[in-house]
Image (cartoon, rainbow, N blue to C red; front, side):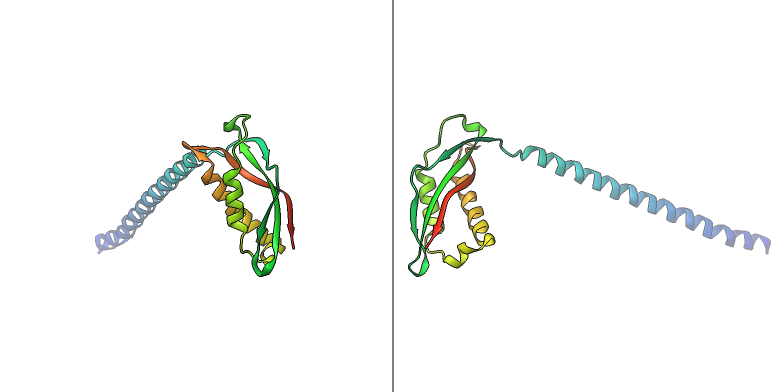
Length: 151
């Protein structure tokens, strides 16, 4: 009888030891996976480097864009180039076209709020960055409005 009691008492101890080993192993595997993901994502951020600010190229003329309901927008702007472009100004012809396309047909209500202007500007900047990326080199990084009048 004493042997049976000893065997019954030892069974839970082995079970507890096995459970602790399984938990420890699971923590090691999860911790290793988390650390691997951290270092892999950290490497991606280092590669996606933000370009440095370069010169600002101002458009010589303002443009007038037809808005919805017979209104119009008088728009002047300057492009912030990246340092990679050096000191030579980019040709603004495509920037004029993209700005006209982006604002034509918009409503005064869209342009009257900070959120509306910021959303449209972000869309225009994305198009400018795409248009002014040549051979993998980003030439433009932002647009500054020098004139923005709706009527």
